[in-house]
Length: 257
Image (cartoon, rainbow, N blue to C red; front, top):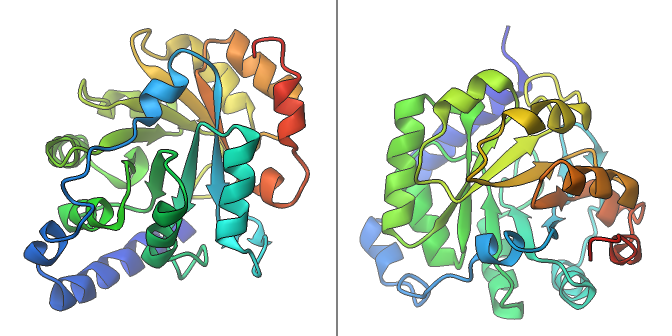
């Protein structure tokens, strides 16, 4: 039976075929952003716990989050509130985003920008760099180990940082030494079930020499404090920020800051 993740990836592969018909790699290479040195998300969170604040309008798990979102105003809020970086959902069909969101946000801020996308083809890496991304997301559950390693090498050759997302202990086997940040997604992308316990349980198994981030299902400063105590370097927060359920003021009250 096809899961929502299978459906998303199948749709993404169709989009990539259309992308290749419209643009050549030379179109991306000629972009003003292509040779730009990236702003490092890894550097901003490896020494002090930081929040990666997300931009998205909807999701398969939450439905409509903020369909009328003014992305540039939201970026201004994130920047003034002390976010370490910004995650930008660029999938349109399931998350309501676009690569144009990333391009617009790049004109607004010098914070590190993570392109959060279902990346399965190196074409998307060239597109990401040309649009102004500083880092890209690779998702273990949709890639074989060799695919993940290949995409990591290509991304690094373009100057992009690589955030590698896992959900389970078994997916740790797909890690490679070139990634910059390891992200634990507390949401099962196949079932859309979310529990922060995933990060708590996996914490002791994570490599000691990686920069580690927890994502999804985080809604208060007590959870952030526990993640920090367990050795995480940061957290990616989206829905609770966009719905106003989590305030940056709560983050500033953490004793680790």
